[in-house]
Amino acid sequence: MDQTKIEILDLINDKYLIDEYFNLKVKRELNMDIDLSSEYVTAHNIVSKKLILVQTFSHAIMENPQLYLLLRSLIHTINSSEVTKSQLLSALKNK
Image (cartoon, rainbow, N blue to C red; front, top):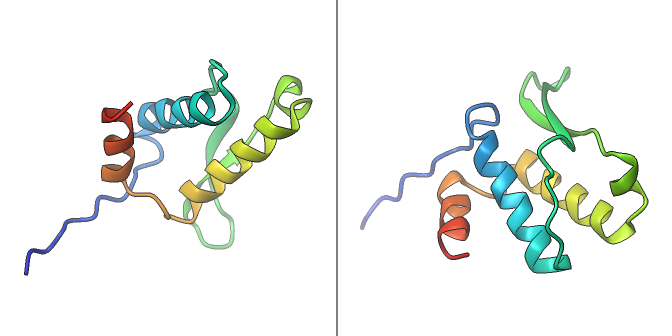
């Protein structure tokens, strides 16, 4: 049986991948080209001491309910480790 290595995302060093992934998902789901790199930051959770993404949504994001909900969902997916680095890379490779 082959053992698959699961690569955990490094929220600081892999930010460019997360940015590209978020842009790709928004393009696919909502047919929008938008730079999302400034719509969230990396911070330490004060309870778990774990790095997480925290939304810093602009007014433009807040005014668009579909985009707002999609971004919240994507951030939650990353924070709950539901997606691995290899899954992100695979999605970006198969644009």
